[in-house]
Length: 147
Image (tube, rainbow, N blue to C red; front, side, top):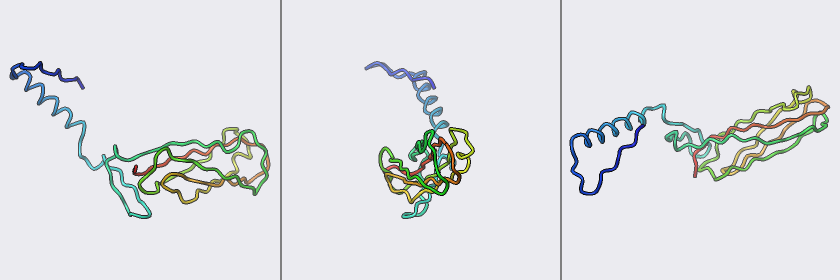
């Protein structure tokens, strides 16, 4: 959107300038709509569902390196944690996915379990289902309401 030129001090406001003002405000109002799809609803354990403007929600995509060319034994576990930069008002919704960065068969037999997140951190456990060498990351998607 084009920026509207600021008037000089003492400049008379003519019809052209007022038209530019009205046109710019109208363009802005169509870009910033109050439609329902501009809201994000986040279910919190302590305060039920919270709806906020999507621009007021916070989304973090995080990566935690769990194993890098490591030899693992089946039925063992490794813990990990991820600290949020800045706190959330309520514990956020967190989703985790294992990424088999080494593309090994042992890396295909892995599971992840998250512990209950806090307003500033999430912890989890990776369980190995097979013996072998692997490289894996945990990708996190964290959605919440900032403090």
